[in-house]
Image 1 (cartoon, rainbow, N blue to C red):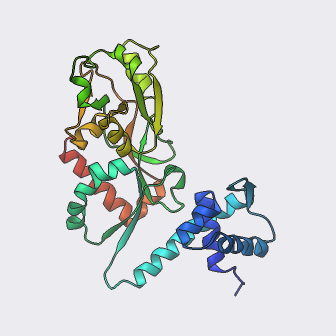
Image 2 (image 1 turned 90 degrees about the horizontal axis):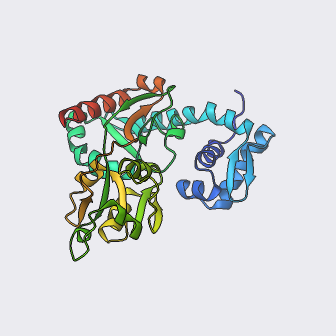
Length: 297
């Protein structure tokens, strides 16, 4: 039998390539950074060539690394699933799902009991880290993504259509100087999600004020923290109608409700076409789409 490198070295290589740094990969694998680096070096010595370009704190796969990752990451995932299946006394199918935290907390997790009742054999590994679409097939089977559009080479189903809402503290509508005119945004900060950078631009264009500039624009990578910041009076969050409605937070109010703006962003279910051959992907996709249809989305 042809000699192979240690499985731990392959696992370390895939983790660093996927996460982009030794530190992050070491945390995921519960190793020290030096120990993980030695494992990657073991693989590089085995194949007698470097696999990464080292850029300051980042580790970026080079051409050889990209080719190797594309070939072995899916095999490593299949091995993990096979071992998990053998160690279980109950038939279990597992979906590795990438999902944004706010969608997970507002719309997915309240329904997971229904999913378990419908498909008790289906278990989810939830991943809320960023850049999920780029990790399809390399640790993720499917993704619920927030995007303007999706690469046409992927399988994608739009899950909703939304409006852009200006969301602020309810106190902004009260007091001697209530915020009721869009021009008053010039005296406030605007909060924008990094995955929805065009929401504010779309809203102010629809409001007929394309040149209005707020005091500041603050960027967030967490929708939940954006809503909390808005509730605390730290600025006006430009988010989706569903974010506001599902939050059901009495501290929050929709501002400028007479301005209707269709969001350029939608939630999508996305996977690689060949992933539809996997039972957990099909079970979850069918359940999700059926559930959203029942909700009238």
